[in-house]
Image (cartoon, rainbow, N blue to C red; front, side, top):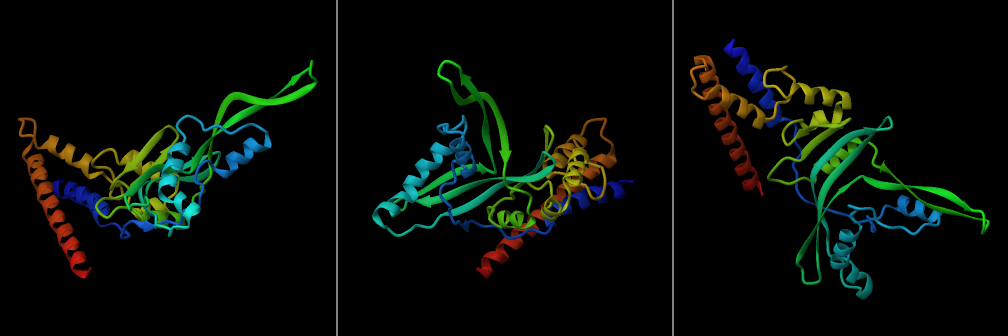
Length: 277
């Protein structure tokens, strides 16, 4: 029984550690100004002849301030264009109105005219669309469009495996990207929870099932159990209390040894990569 349990734990962990992972680093970014506000949102306001106003929590002001520092002087003075880099920290798969979409969080790094690095963080892929209604003034015999107070969330990046690969390849070198799945009001995933192949190729329903089943430690061989969750539960088993059996104590010790082994492997791989550079 102990052997089976260990195989379950190690198989789940191995998927997390050794899954097919693309080397990640900051990538040059082709900025398509303006990022904010979204062109469709501006057109929507213009079509209704209503002045655009950023909604609460919008990135408009922060983006414009960042852009003024890293690019505006080029437009006015003809100064050389300074490169902009991106680093992806989070990718989210989700569904809305029967269609699948992607959201992603990233930090864009530009430089001001003194070559100081200026970061801009945002989560891209959605905007808030206000609802309008038409009212009629009988005295003036005039119709006007006004805000009704309602708001709709619009998603505009459809699921695309090539885009997932592009985003994933621009992640940080020192840690995994958070791969997340939104299903209804629940969110599953995190760093090291889903493998890259799972996240890219599985259906949303399959990822949700892995998320639900992966909350426990001993579920199925294909479930992806977070190392942090596994460590906490195994540590609880190996506390040394009178309730903990000898097998549970040994399981905790074996898992600690396995962690040391994997950490040693990762360090060796990093050293080899540095030597190649």
